[in-house]
Amino acid sequence: MIATILFLAYNQQDFVAQAAQSCLAQVGEPLEIILSDDCSTDNTYAILQQVASQYTGPHRVVVRQNHKNLGIADHYNTLVELATSQLLITAAGDDISYPERAQTLYKAWQASACKLDLIASYANSITHDGQPTGKTIKVDQLAKWKNAADWCAKRPYVVGATHAFTKRIWTEFGPIASDIHYEDQIVALRALCLGGAQTLELPLVDYRT
Image 1 (cartoon, rainbow, N blue to C red):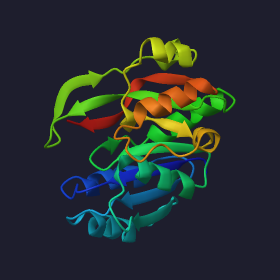
Image 2: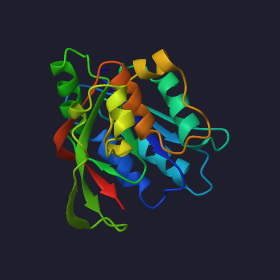
Image 3: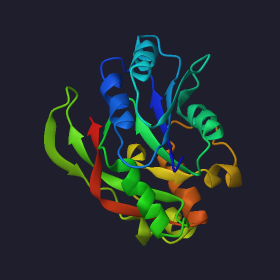
C-alpha cells in the first residue's frame, strides 16, 4: 500500500458516511484505509461498519473502535502504530476528501525523494450542512519554515485535516502527550526538525465549519 488514510471520527453520525465514502473513492494505487471511531455515543461506529461492508474496491479497509474515548492525541497515537505505510494521510469524520487527494499527496512526497515529513494542502470551506461557502482556506506555505527555530519565532497557520505526514515523526519522537487537543502544530514542528514540510497550493478537502 502506498499510503494509509487515518480516518478519525467521534459523534459525527450526520456526516461520517459521506466522509468515509470519500476516502473509499480515492483513485489510483491501492491504499490502506483505517476507519476509526473514538468510542462514540451515537451511531457513528455502526455507520462506518455499514459503509465498509458495502465496499468492493481495491483499497484495504479496516474498521475499528477504541474501547474507551481516547481523545485526539491518543487516537492518533493508536492509529499511527496500527498503520503499515510510511505516509499517513489525515481524514476527519466530517470532512470530504477529493478523489485525487491521496495520489496527489503521495506524488508530492515521492517528488521530494520521500524526504519531506509533512505535506499540507489548501481546503475549500463548506457550511455545517455541506454547502460551499465560496472560501478557500489557504494555509501557510510550509516550505518557508526551514527549521524549528522558524517555528518558534512564528508558528505557521495550519489545518491538520489537510495533512499527510510520515510515520517516522512518531518513531523518532514518540507518541504525543495525551492531554494535547490539537496535533497539527506538533506535527508541523516535528516535521521541521527532520525532513521539512511543504504546502500544495490547491484544495484537496472540503472542510466543514
